[in-house]
Image 1 (spheres, helix red, strand yellow):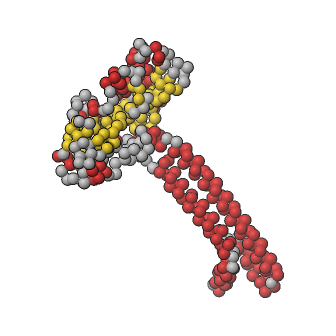
Image 2 (cartoon, one colour):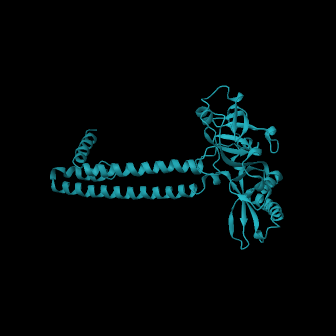
Image 3 (tube, rainbow, N blue to C red):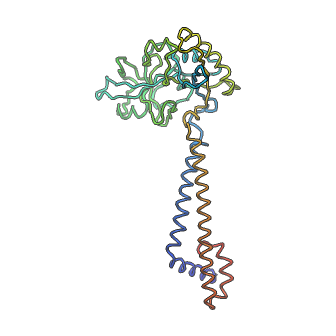
Length: 345
């Protein structure tokens, strides 16, 4: 025990004389391990942690891929009637929903705030199993072509614009001249799927029938928009590839009929791409996370190699001191054996 105490004391005194050595080791390991911890957390959130939806393994987005005459990609945009036809077919999906985004001013509010809106069919929040703070989500009475003016608010909108009013379900809001009865408030921990843009938060949810698409777009297959979304639960036993093979002929045939009188679209076609909601939400984030993780692990290995070199140099220096001072000779062998195992050398 006395020998161990003596060695600790000598190591401390030795390191005290070399503050640069101590700083190099501590700062190198601290920075690299901190970076590793941050990237591991990020990788877990992006690659491993499940989405907050109970049926995420069957939750997919269908994309309307337009292909030109030369088989070139012309973009991923739905036509309004094409989207509605796909929604009504339910060929590969057990439950599906349409959605589109917009903005509006609540003219019935004293401050008349500009809010982000989303126009959705009644199935959306059922598919997402959206938690509610108050009231209810949309139901069959607000389905497509029912023209029932109701609305749901986000939790933040309820708290910020309506001061968390306890009687919020008895109130109405007026958007673009339409009076909507508030039927529900989404829970604070509800996570909206980022299908349009990252960071966008819908403040007011409205029925699909009141979307801002003009009458011309609603009838014309040749007018496409990247603001139209389709999301749903695949039928049990159907994978994404099978869904694509099933839906593409149906959607393409209907689209070809819709643009038959327009020479501009001669030779064009439509493919349906079915992708997991998680892939759509994360985009390229997953591959970036993997690259970052590999890079940080490589950085930690380099840091460990550099610190090993520092300790080797320190060992050589102490060996020379022992060789010069004969009084330290009895401790030389003990020191050399232990120095490789103790980072205090």
